[in-house]
Length: 347
Image (cartoon, rainbow, N blue to C red; front, top):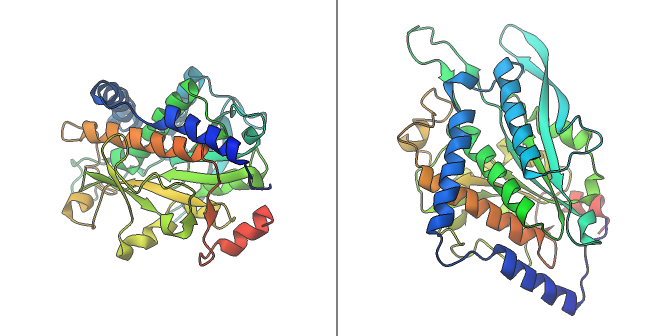
């Protein structure tokens, strides 16, 4: 794919479109209130005890997948001819210390075609994994909670994905957007690896990936972005506070390695510019460790739903900005993935 080269007039038009479609109104309270109610409904269902931690291969994981499919359908997302009504069948290998088995799972994939007749051939991927650890009995205390609900990891990410899908369905971007909910992330990013190997569009037509994943939050004034320092942007939507009033900052230097432990790395290694959006954190402290990969990671009364709403809106605003940008993101020359990008895109 040849990266878009736009004439000055076209660039002006794109800028105006971006201003109209992505800049939020001054009074955000009604929008945030609506987003809070919708986000709360999504995450409280997906992280409920009834779904038993969304372990790949379980009946509850299939229920979660069906929930996502019906949300995609209600938003009017299109499905690819290579998928079965948004389901992309994925074999996931489950390993334990004593056994190995392969279970049948699904990525959930839909897309919105871009409104521009030329730019719609370029695809941005918005993604989040919807699997978690399932049920792990406590061998010491059999009466203790054994359901790993995964509200923060990654109920927040998948809720933000649904929020963005709904908003894009009402306000089509210039470029096409793929919405990808992956399975098997906790099992070694198997769902994202399968997607890129069985990609429903040419891999070199994907110009950017915004993954959404995290382990929790200890700072609700910001969100963190992994991998951003390696990419050139024509306009930087995270320099200042975006519409929902949240600061956007790179991962702390000592925690940059976390970017390589999520789905986005699968795309980066193919040469596709990719970043991971995460809830706000400044260090791995007790506020994080209390929930990450623990049965305590629930969407209960102590969950900050107002922050979740702002997090969802911020994710959409970033996505909208990039989907409508005049110039596509690209790897910086010093990046580990620069040469892969040259190989993939031809320049």
